[in-house]
Length: 235
Image 1 (cartoon, rainbow, N blue to C red):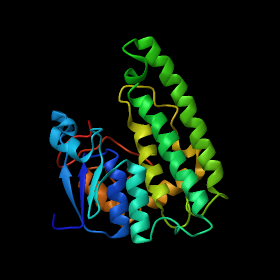
Image 2 (cartoon, helix red, strand yellow):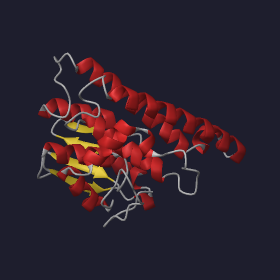
Image 3 (tube, one colour):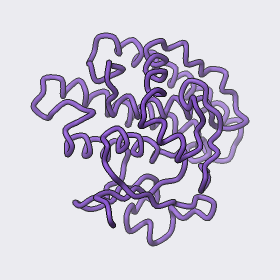
Image 4 (cartoon, rainbow, N blue to C red):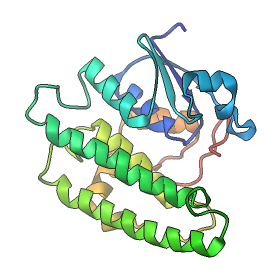
């Protein structure tokens, strides 16, 4: 490994969040494509890095790290950027939103994407679950949007944070997936703080680098289309 970091990724997967953070921090890194078409994430070699068989994994001088929020927090603390310092009076507010995004928003989105994993093959049960999940996601976004103005400078603030990068990717995926499903519920302009955050992020060099690397187009958050990556596939 010639750089300090090696990111195991698939285009337009959760690894995109980590790529954005590394780009925003200006940290050099290598990428290793995880070929989802052959389910390489379930291979023995990949499971040595993440026994759960999930993307992303970041190899670091301290060993491999998995779980998106864990990687973000580790990087932010190690490099002293994109998050408040451990002894900052803004740390508590930052942490509660990081784990709300990870444990609640992202977790509920995963249920919407893979309902069969939670209720089995019955399509009626899947449709009912997805209906509930869309309502839950709307509530979560409304909560975050309302909090953005006054809760913490690290949420939709003047400068990007790991919270913003994580949120922007989740908003992108809500607008695009699952393909063939009803996605009319997801209108980004309903959430003005989140819309402004996404608009500002699209001007960042970090986002420009990521969208070129993964084929995301000029407006990956405010008006996204399916990725057209130079290598690999999102699913």
